[in-house]
Amino acid sequence: MGLGDKIHNAATKLTGKAKEATGKATGDKHLKNEGKGDQVKANLKQAGEKVKDAFKRH
Image 1 (cartoon, rainbow, N blue to C red):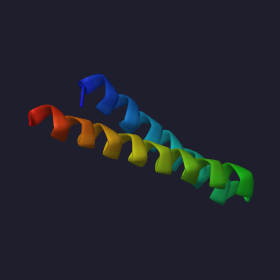
Image 2: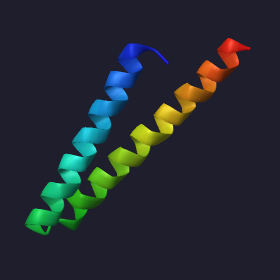
Image 3: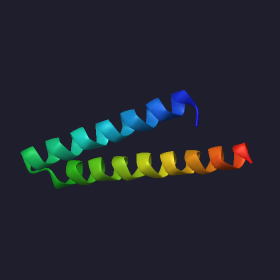
């Protein structure tokens, strides 16, 4: 996994956490769910990058 990918995934995850927290604080269910979705996307991308790295090593 490239450093740029790691940074991008971490930023997406943090943005998702911020959206979720803001949604909870304001009662905005759409924003809260969008934040959760962003976190899931970031986690999936990170997992995919790890799989690619594992195949590159072998």
